[in-house]
Length: 444
Image 1 (tube, rainbow, N blue to C red):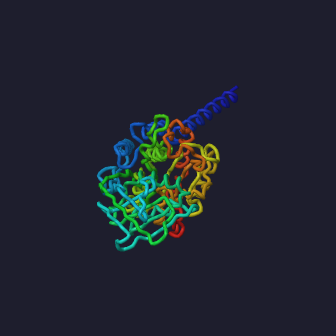
Image 2 (tube, rainbow, N blue to C red):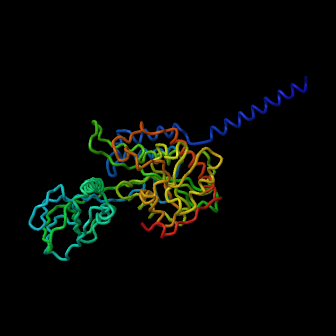
């Protein structure tokens, strides 16, 4: 009888101990799902007006994120008085009043013009003569023209009429991209949808340009490292909080809320800041940044990279579009530029034993490594990679007014953020250090 009583008591105590252990693990296992839902619903709400850079909606989003960093207990970066890292940009609006090619007036809907001259009166008689570029029917219009949107010389681009759809997309991009990081030089780029006329080329262009300074802000906070020998080393967690603002109305809705792109990634940054603050055991310093202006050229990331020593950044976890399940199924995410450092392999190793898997980028043809804010620091040698779940080749909600919170899988999104936090543990503790990225690996 005593033996039976002892065994019963032992079983009870063992079960109680296991129950207590399970409760503790569950409580500290991952990021707070309530925080995830609250933050993303706030960022993607209609009153944020799509968070386009330089708009009141963008400023409102930045103020909300700064308040979240304050609530969590982050510290400003050294040299900043608060969490706003401000920088100037310049809004350049060129209105083409008149364009003629070899005596024929060109329809305004077939002309794109950007100039640094307040009052432009430009003809073929002016020196120096412009550089002439042609984009063929099978050419990559955006790749050819993007460098010319900040003119360094006078250029005229003739675009094959077969590229009409791409020309329309370029026009939309230029409309969104009215902001630039530097004041424009007094050069002009003229893009014409049409075949080049016979030589000699004669042209006349008249236009006006207005330039306005617009202040943008990244939102940056940090948790100083707790190990003296590691505190100067930094691990960055980032996402961009800007989106497109307003688009053409669809069923009465014109707000591009950007729930997945990239309120989801920015939510991940906030949730991870809260998670690591509660853990309170980071040997290396952790930097949390919500970037402005990713959608119009990555100006926020570029400014951030100039305010921080890239040699001290041991890794960058850039989080971009994690609101929907990846092609690999639930509890998975992919890492861009997987072959450019051992960052991805480290995360894979650290995720072993869990239900979560990190996979290499399944869409290399999309060049995603170069299309987000990680690329700026990667070019400076930082093992900076983007973590995403978006099935971008088939994502019909991307850059549309239908990118709403209701389209997202919030439990899976919370699992992704939790997996990032857990798998970053070795890097944060200083036990793991990813290899630096060679400059030639990011030459694009």
